[in-house]
Picture 1 (tube, each protein chain N blue to C red):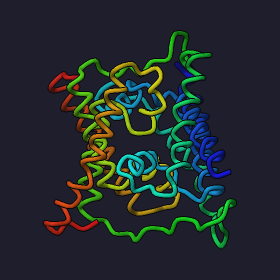
Picture 2 (cartoon, rainbow over the protein chains, first blue to last red):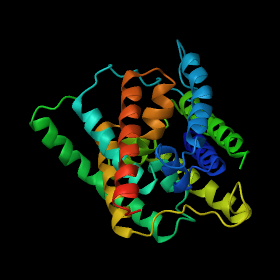
Picture 3 (tube, rainbow over the protein chains, first blue to last red):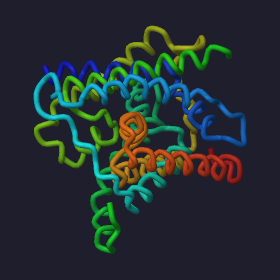
Length: 143
Length: 147
């Protein structure tokens, strides 16, 4: 059952990315490009996605997931340098190619050699991340 | 085109419903970088199988839709229009991979799931990756002309 609903969630996520046009890197870069030909679409996608999730989070109060277990606890509101450094690095890559992890996987079938290369490089980056995280920990960077 | 925002909003609602389903049924946060990253660095443990199924859906459904309908909004085939500058693509992938794992989230985890929960970490992360993304487009597109 868990696997079935994971497949359905992933599929619905992919359908949403496809329908919204978020696998078109020109649209993503167009949204980030405030000094160019600005494209507002991404704001509608974000807004549309946040609405059902806002109600879903409210529903979780004093309840448990349908398939058992616990809902993930809200993280401590710690704003450390790792959050800032990591998000900044992510943003640089996101603007450079117009791809983030979800849309990269969603467009893998029609993105050609470039998207396949991006996903491979992203995988390598994810493998490198724990070491870089340790380095940051070693110099005393907070979460 | 005038209808772009309607497609955006409709697609966004589907993404939000997907995240809501994954949360309410499986009890998980739908964060793409965490789901993929945990499989790659083998920290997913007993969650590995459901994550593989999630990625299968994320890859498979757009693949089938693109095969049948081409581009969702216009005539012609589905296309990402990603830059042909392969060095830029590799650099971007490395930055996205390292950055999302250090920050513990990306557009779906920090953005969609975090902001909707009014999580301070999600909001701060989103502000930083959007600002960095905007600067990145200015530098690499407008100043350097690489992409």
